[in-house]
Length: 639
Ligand SMILES: *Cc1c(COP(=O)(O)O)cnc(C)c1O
Image (cartoon, rainbow, N blue to C red; front, side, top):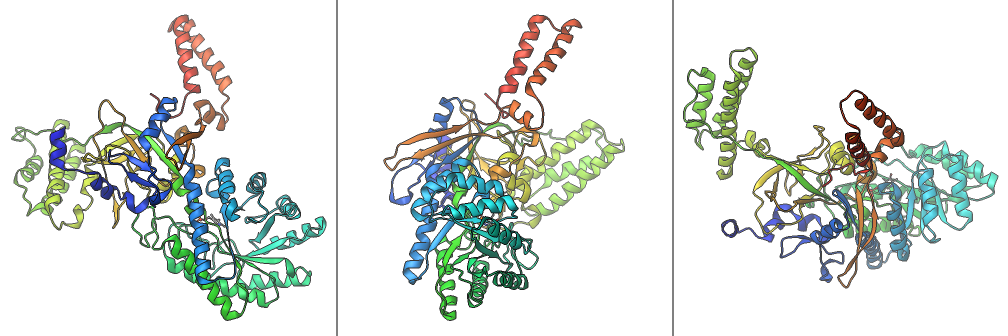
């Protein structure tokens, strides 16, 4: 063991670099001298660090199984503070005359606990909520009580939704209806007249500015929501004709989520600021400019305009927005509006980590092959074998091409019955020997042929991990989003294996085989050889935004256990909340099974087995116990 460490001279610094933790963690995660991932919720000003392995051991002692979604409450607080303080600083330094009011869009993570904490931590900044449906409005009204905070109602609204929003206005909430489609306005005016409550109206606009990136589709002329300028003028005229222009108080747009390029953000702000000015000149009181979401998270830590990154900091984002709005308003001679943003992703992404254990590894191992091919082998096999024996650094590309050719030919001959099963198996072994030699040789080459760029992934180990991609990281499956993934311990040791990750759904899409990298996307992840006597833990980071509620019940893997931790500035921490994940009975009842009836049915089947003489009554008891325990158990792999 010692010898190996000396040989590898691996250090925690090397792990830091390999997994890029300093680049993507925003200072919240580090590696300790012991080689474990730690959480530093108070940033570099404080030396409070809590080891994730220590938390895992606490979770284990409390009897909860993996996978666990770990929430670090403080990180919500820190992110809300970060956004608000950045805007305040920009406003101060540029001498902007308006204010900033953030709102948290509930859809990004609707867990009651999250919204409650946003309301609690956000109170000192009057951070409000954004809702996109009736259900979200009802949720928001049960939690929000700050009358200074904004409550922004987006989404398609029916009468019930509108009435509830109007009552909120009457109760003193700063509740805005954002008109998403032209037809909505008439209904708002009707309900307002009926209830005799004057609404605060906002208009959502379609900008001509568009943004690049995975999720950004709301911008541009063809976006599904928002009014174009002609519709905007019609709406304005309708308000005028009904003597309701004084209700128009907000302009809104949302370009889409995760906008990686600051240029797209800037150009949208310029356009929206001009439209805002136009509305003021038409006589609308306005006062609020709502720029929607889009503030991106740097998932891969590359600080570029790649779709999983962003080429700007939160500070730059704030300064750019304030600067642009200020200069347009000054030019147009219009008072500076209150700036509203609806950042969801950046508020909650950092706060959750999915922790899972590795259950098994399918190693890529090549079997030794005999010195000579079997007697009377087919010529194709001899040729393949010849490649193995004559390969050098110089002819590596040629060998690779030939090996592929012979392997495919051999498979074809096998299908036609011209090559035996044993011969084919020998050929496959030779082929994988060739590939693994090429992969080894490639490391010595300064430059290698492009064909070989991904060869490591062909010979990677498969690490089977106790989680479901579909339930816990659905965006990886759906849109190939990258999340930082790394071991939570053993970071003083060199990770010697090259791996891809498989979940336990047994679905061929239930895997992770693209990983963050500073310059590219990696197709293998370096991991440690799991040891016999200790569980090996991986963390999937930055999963707090969108993943939880987009997740589904593929293969009936349900919600994971959830544990929330609060860390104190003195260094201590508490387990503040535990939510047990779904049981098998829970997920079955989601798809309309009735667990009680299932037990009855199965009991009947077992009783029949007694009648048929297959089992004894005593055996029935054991079988029924097993079935019952299964129903009550966790849907994931239990120890
Ligand atoms: C989804 C959404 C947001 C959140 O965007 P993020 O990029 O997560 O900050 C904000 N506003 C509206 C209208 C949305 O639909």
